[in-house]
Length: 257
Ligand SMILES: CCCCCCCC/C=C\CCCCCCCC(=O)SCCNC(=O)CCNC(=O)[C@H](O)C(C)(C)COP(=O)(O)OP(=O)(O)OC[C@H]1O[C@@H](n2cnc3c(N)ncnc32)[C@H](O)[C@@H]1OP(=O)(O)O
Image (cartoon, rainbow, N blue to C red; front, top):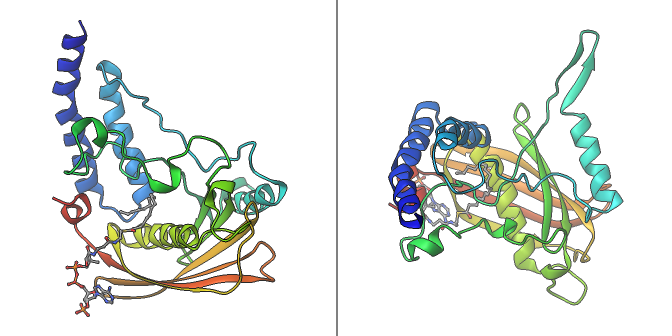
């Protein structure tokens, strides 16, 4: 019985990948978060008829949870309100969009040729690999496509300690790479970080909430230059400044094939 289930699942996986690749190649990647979701959805219909053994609706890690402090919730509420604006005809889409956040950027991609098949399926996005709420990276990104910029509310958990009581510089760099990379990917499709230049101006206390403000500086051919400032939520304190260079790559480069 178990062997038959496994055979069915193995037969289904290539179909799933084909569907995913179709959606990717037909729609382009400029709207990547939607694309991931729609590619996932188009494959989902099939998965309902199959023996696909995994959860079909991935958890959105950027939803408020009990670990969020009042300041984190406040920043979330502020930008969330800007996602819908009230008009005389009712509510309509505002200039901001809350991006969903999953624990794999491409949930069903096989990756990592150096990993065994079983371990490959356990690969997870670095910033979303701890299930415990509030322990590491609690964050939510809001995108303003018109203005080519985004903001991210980030609450740094106790497992991100570097200097006593403060956030590790590598964790800050991770968040800067994630947020600037999300902006570059959202605007330009598949990208990889080529250069990240960071100035740490003042330490970030563990458990505190900061805001990452990221904006497109310019594009030159395949090169996408992005800036980032990490500030206190009221912007009175500058914690970190960074510039990043992303290069547009093809899907093969992204998957390492
Ligand atoms: C798909 C994303 C969509 C996401 C949307 C939202 C979904 C949300 C989900 C999850 C959020 C997570 C978001 C995270 C984002 C993080 C991304 C990473 O951390 S990536 C890991 C670290 N990076 C590497 O491992 C790269 C390693 N390097 C390479 O693979 C290559 O070097 C690469 C691709 C960067 C460039 O290689 P070439 O062959 O394509 O390009 P060449 O020809 O070398 O360069 C093109 C131009 O760029 C300049 N260039 C290249 N590297 C440079 C550098 N380091 N500094 C300055 N210029 C550089 C060159 O001089 C050249 O310029 P001239 O056209 O001649 O003017």
